[in-house]
Image 1 (spheres, rainbow, N blue to C red):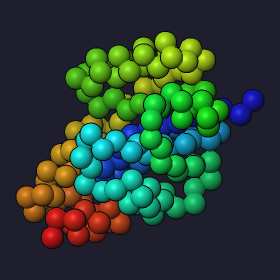
Image 2 (tube, one colour):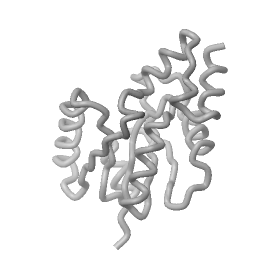
Image 3 (cartoon, rainbow, N blue to C red):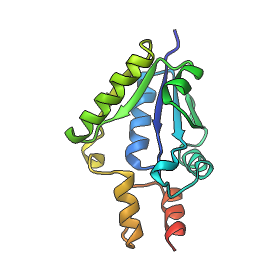
Image 4 (tube, rainbow, N blue to C red):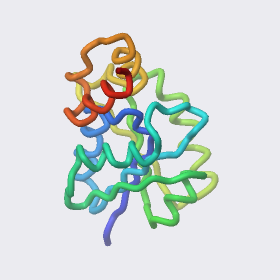
Length: 159
């Protein structure tokens, strides 16, 4: 039986931590859908199309990975994609309470879809898209935290 997992996020910008979670998920599931959320409430730096394009540049044509933008409820999108698993990354204990709430709500909305939490390696534990944007905004070097294509795109946004 083929197992499809969905890894949702705004990915604004897409970081090495995101890439690591996807790489690890690919070892566990037959298909991983990177679901890029159109969430205007977060005031993203990049448009949905730009974020989809950047993730495609970073991941290329990797086997078993599908990159899609979406809007609306994640659980509805997951069901449309016939995903059985939602992947969520946990960087710190502080992430757990919010992620636990999301997982519980998603289970209530669609009990057939499970949530799996992955923790990053030590080198990516502190990396968040918000911190990357803040560092870039003030002219700091974000190259250790993002792919070259993302680095260039972020620099262009702030120049």
